[in-house]
Image 1: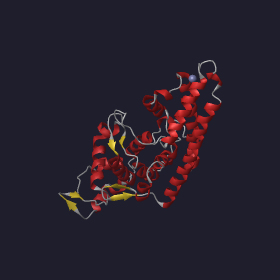
Image 2 (image 1 turned 180 degrees about the vertical axis):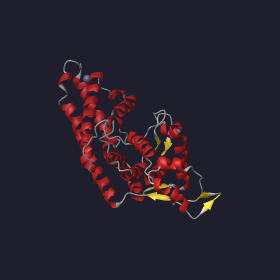
Image 3 (image 1 turned 90 degrees about the vertical axis):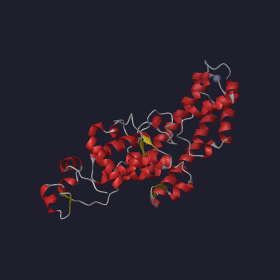
Image 4 (image 1 turned 135 degrees about the horizontal axis):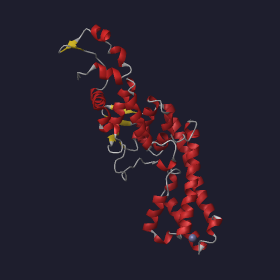
Length: 302
Ligand SMILES: [Zn+2]
């Protein structure tokens, strides 16, 4: 694949091309095509051509309008690899901004363990859970360790077969190396331990509900039975067998309530329970940096 490009546009955006594109360097190239000097590279032609298109369109490129466009993960990854190679800062920054929305580093409320963005009008990336494996690699390539805790936490929910065999992009298989795999499995073990804390939180709520409920809840014993059954149903469906200590329970509560209205405590108990569980999730989130070796954690909001 061959591209004819303006050397000044390439030199402006491609830091590493500046020397290669100087008039003396171009004059020294021995090969030429249609009167233009030929510079050969080993990059993927598909992604290099997309990158060139993004740079030629500049700010008008859809690429830079993340609220309006969804970039498929394999395309984002391919472009990111070429952009990293030539240090194209504007494109790398956009890749990081999009990845940060899928793998947040500050606010737990933005973490989505299944990478299910079906409710979003325009997700920043068309991404699947198994793409978190390649996201770990991208975080390292782009020197963005702050993406690692959330990326590893998503990996913790991927089935072992995929985790070990890797994920396929075209003719390339991306796998975690041994050290990354150990880190992922170690983190998964700790997240599973955190599940017992979530269960403990539910049981403590039943044994000693927050004092604020005393004057609000009219029937604590009925509410306690409902919450006990709710916890039991979570155990029965295997909720605590998966690393779910970071998952919001709000959606799960409403699903259960819809199927089993008899499990619904009063609105006061319901709200207090959700707040208590969310506080517990926050404690796990605070530990995530330590689990995956990233400090400081969480990262302060910019
Ligand atoms: Zn109640």
